[in-house]
Amino acid sequence: MRPGPIRAAGGVVWRDDGTLRIALIYRARYDDWTLPKGKLEHGERELDAAVREVREETGATVAVTRRLLAIEYTVSAGRGGTDHPGNDIPKTVQFWAMRYLSGEFSASAEVDDLVWLPLDDARHRLTHVVDRAVLDSFTARPVPQSVVVLVRHAKAGKRSHWMAMTGCARWTRPDVVRRAVSRRSCRRSRRRGWCQPTGRDACRPSSRSRTPAAWTSRSPRRSPTRPTSSVRMGHGRAARDRESHAGCGDLQPGHRRAGPRR
Image (cartoon, rainbow, N blue to C red; front, side, top):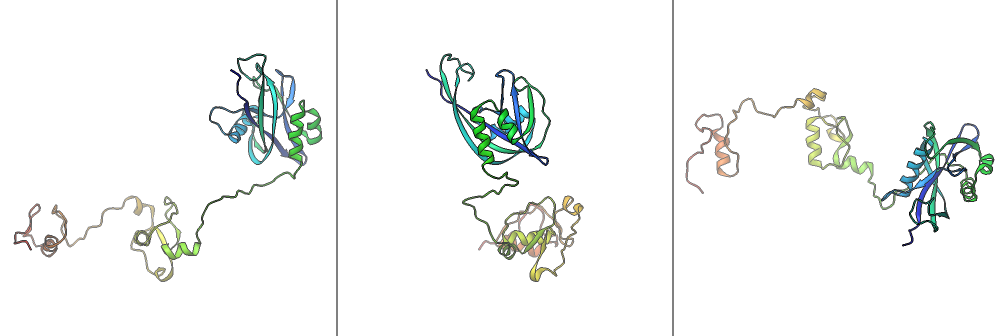
């Protein structure tokens, strides 16, 4: 059975220290100067594989800037890592432009040396013609210094609508993530002192302290004039009877007032 095509990914790693320089790696096993790249692992995306391979082969932490050329060529079966000698296997490599951020190179079993060269020197040092085509696609446009990410099919609300809906200008509790809340939960937040009210409620003082101790050691509210009991709370006549006899002592815990039902 003929093996399938090999998918790989890599990057044109560059840095600008007054002169734009490109990272090239030397592989003694193949005796070539090339761009860092490698095969995709099972279930791995191309961009993830490109960043991983660049980090493994150059030791560099990079910022991906833009997508470059995808090259196609054939490799021998033994070099492609298969058990089908004598067959040429197609290989596709997708490249990205990557800005160098940090990291130090160390030689490994796959890469023996790394150099940073200016564009013209790097182009002449590259062994393979397909790698020069990738470098040409990198120099075809100005070097990107920043990235703008466009999010499609997203919906953003207005800040004025948020404030009108919640009544909150900002969150002051540090461990509360800003999120969309209803009017009811926002009123509860104002009572607990978690958010800053606006509008006509701005002058209304908070009934609770906003110190971290008040947030961590909050105890349930209990009225000092009404004793607590284990009487089950409910609705209707039984609830009204408990309300009217609370604190009078004639309604014991676990008992209900006797009387005809309506």
